Image 1: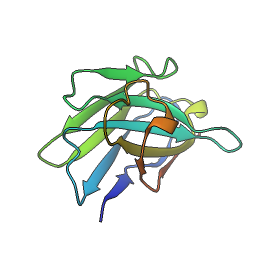
Image 2: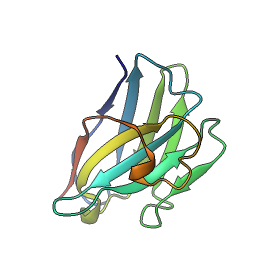
Image 3: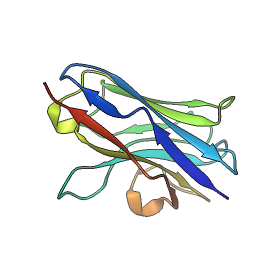
Image 4: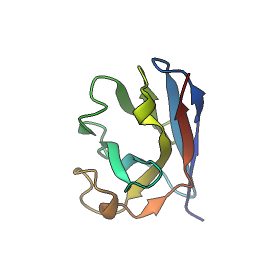
Length: 125
């Protein structure tokens, strides 16, 4: 069974950091585009950051550039999202997803096929 599981969410104060991890089971993430997306209440799901199959191409939303870093850990079969200098507006559910097949570099939710259940991130003092 192909499955993605996010971990690492939680409550953090503004300016703090969290590291989200997307773990795959039943398949290897290597060779596919993987993305992180977020969805705030009442809003559409948006791309946060995506990483190419080789890890050589990274895509970040303007709102997170310079604060978030996406990376692969092939040994663990995970794709992580390091989030620093978190802001209240970063509060959302964060999902990872995989693009099977070509494409995925534009980090659009509609381009991704297999999704995790999500991890909640709350940024509040």
